[in-house]
Image (cartoon, rainbow, N blue to C red; front, side):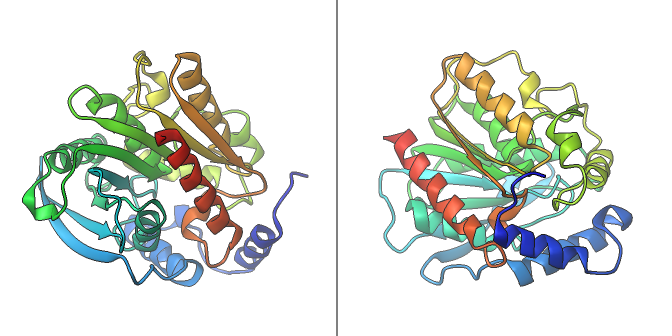
Length: 307
């Protein structure tokens, strides 16, 4: 049996006792509501001393909703974090990740902008990628609407948001200064089917059935680097990377492999793995207190990477 942290074990036991359909057994609208409900129970409240402002960003298919987070004592060097939320490109929004984005701004000191990109199946691949890149370009232009100057970006995101962060960091690094890419248990290989994908397919929050459901709705070309960035042939001079994986995550091995490819190509990388931790833990920090410690450790890693 793999090692499972005590707080993780308690949450998994509680969830196993809950009756009702699983996420992959319902329609996307119901799944989004379930995801929202889970966060309202399991996530910490957003820090009160971070100023939140809703924004509207011009996008390829109309306005993209976004939210900026300004910490009480911001680092005034022009660095801004562009945050892409997780949820398999099907669920998740500004609200599900509000606390996490605010906490990231507070811990790093960097103004942070969370992006509410279009979701599948209403807007399948590559809509999320198109919105992510458009939003990042707008922020990089340091528009007056932001209320703070931007001279370089850090791309950050969890899961599907880690996927978008890796894609954006690669795509935009030659047109705007990218200080770092912070990939939180990223999905970077849509064709992955072995190792941790099998070992943790059931019973550790993110399941193989859910991943299939997400993938079918997103309808991406799994061989394209803008769906599976690990399949890119462009690895030279990528932005410094912080790659974080969880020991009980089906996506663990692809995160490890991505970090390995970055290192092999000579890029600066900090790799951290949380033993006994599950996918999605970064926004379950009330139910899994050790996930807050994991997040704080990643912020320390990010600061070391930038130093």
